[in-house]
Amino acid sequence: MRHRIDIVQARALLRTRQQLLAAGRTVRELRADVAGGRLIRLHRGAYVHAEDWAGLWWEGQHLLKVLAVRAASPGDGPVFSHASAAVLWGLPLYRMGDMPVQIVIDGTRHSRLIAGVVRRDMQLAAGDVDEIDGFRLTSLTRTTFDVARTAAFDTAVACADAGLRHVCVTGQSVAADADAQWRSDAMNLARPGLRGVRQARDVIRFADGRAQLPGESVSRVRLRQLGFSQYELQIPITGAGGNQYWVDFGFPRSRTFGEFDGEGKYVDAALRGASTAQAAVLAEKQREDDIRGVTGWRFARWGYDDIRTPDALGARLAAFGIRPPG
Image (cartoon, rainbow, N blue to C red; front, side, top):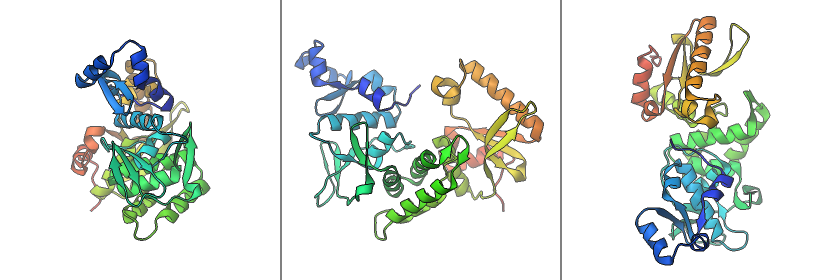
């Protein structure tokens, strides 16, 4: 199963040309490893082992390319933006796919692609630039805004939800003032005439920091596309023994709870919260039975395959009697 990585983990996977040669590889062997697919060349003088590369989600692969570009850059390095800033912030980029590293260069007259790096022509205010672990990058708000105006809508919403969650959600508690401030700051960036500004405004209005996973964010997008408007998010439930639960979605008309069920919830040790996948499945069954018992509501579950299109999710929900109004 693919997994996610942070900057520290990415650094551990990155291999420089000097490191590989010092470990005993010759220049000819290095070229042969790249040609044979055993090594992936990320950027000038930077590599990763193919098996490590294949085990990463797209965000992790892009993060490695960002590190490679930074390693080849002099001084303080460039300001990373858009998707490249998003992966440094640890934001999800649902189904965005491979793309060049994106940086901002002061004085550039127009955006251009050179050696796998897009040099963007953008005017940034002082407050639009931040720093993380030696990387200069656009601020969290500016990053989510730029993704919101340039990525597909579902990708943009997943990224914005995570960004908003970062600034206004602690546990299950939403800080209303911080939520409002984020939306205000993001809307102030939405200048008329800017590319993608209409979508960006829509994303900012639609964003919800209560979404815990990209799959939940994309589920909301699909529900909107299907015409759903009357549903609840992150519903608190107290079990028979006093246990506190939270359920992703609630559909009052159907008296049915809905949960996005990514496979990582059961097979990824970092996410499942139980010692084994079997234990995670059993704990989830016990949780669901408790919630059913105290509420009398049914459960509907869906996964990534069901949110690829609105029709796919609509069919899944209809199987549980959940249909949009009208």
